Image (cartoon, rainbow, N blue to C red; front, side, top):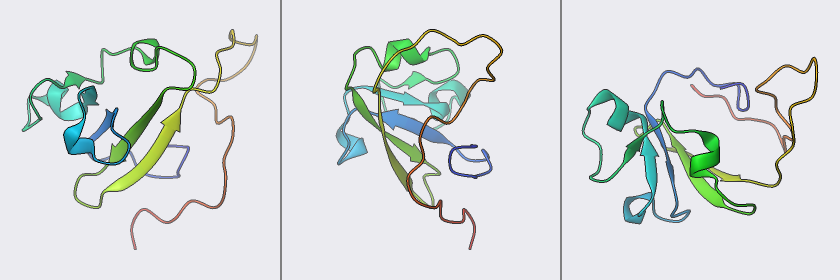
Length: 104
């Protein structure tokens, strides 16, 4: 995960309840793709397009990475632009502060 300088080596999910992910009605989870202990009604992340999960400007979701260490990130769709020629994607648009170390 380039955005946070983390290894992408744990399960994760996106949830429409920013404050309590277990109460989310809309959820996209890696565990649903893997057939592991996911909550009922979750969709997988592998075949879900970003435009499906973030279907309107201003939509916010909680990104929960690593259910053991519980890293929480708020993600918001701020705008949509056409791809720029010769640009590398995915790309980091904005970063605030310094990312904490993933492992102590």
